[in-house]
Image (tube, rainbow, N blue to C red; front, side, top):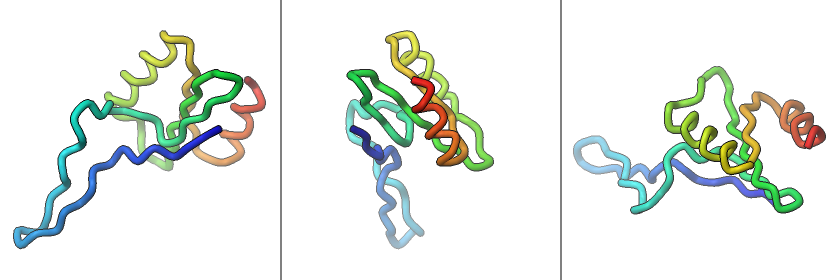
Length: 87
């Protein structure tokens, strides 16, 4: 089971150029882009091109790994498949 988590607020255009809406209360910052549940295990994939993890993403990774989950920063489908095969 897997899903793509939308973790960016909606952009609201207005007469001043626009703004992003606030995230809903209790939304956790730093969630990985793709969340997988495999054999009851939580696995997070943060997909990156040339950018780097934000501080919130690093904090989420630390919390997840401390709780026994897995977290991977991936740059391609091949890296994602390799990570999943290693579990």
